[in-house]
Image 1 (tube, one colour):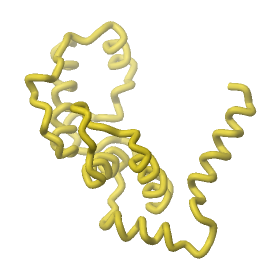
Image 2 (cartoon, helix red, strand yellow; image 1 turned 180 degrees about the horizontal axis):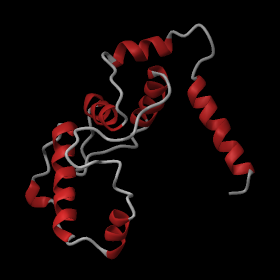
Image 3 (spheres, one colour; image 1 turned 90 degrees about the horizontal axis):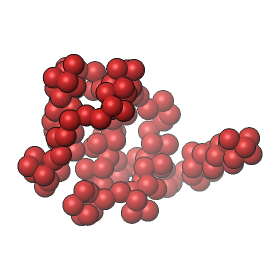
Image 4 (cartoon, helix red, strand yellow; image 1 turned 120 degrees about the vertical axis):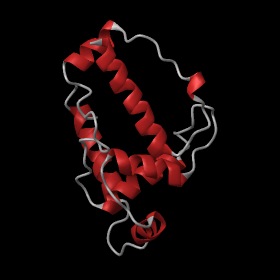
Length: 143
């Protein structure tokens, strides 16, 4: 069982290295500890099934339009909320490359999609406004 989990763990690390383009942190600095009881439990309950073994894709798919994707994640990126493990700033291209892989969405030209979002003739930032409303409603439920 531990061998299988170790193989899955190493497979995920190689996947992230392949798609994240950041290779600054060497494999020697990675921590390959034996999984904890909680990690084993998560594996056994299928919580890691979003990363199927032998597949180059995740099992998650973005279900909104591309402009909403750009609107959300440009806001996250521009807020300086994301950094590399070595504290360096991740490029927009690296950030979106990883997110597009994770959410199984292809955006040919991020900058032109972003420009389209900025040049809307209708309401500006509709997806972010919707998210704020959803969060407000969630808070009102008292959860």
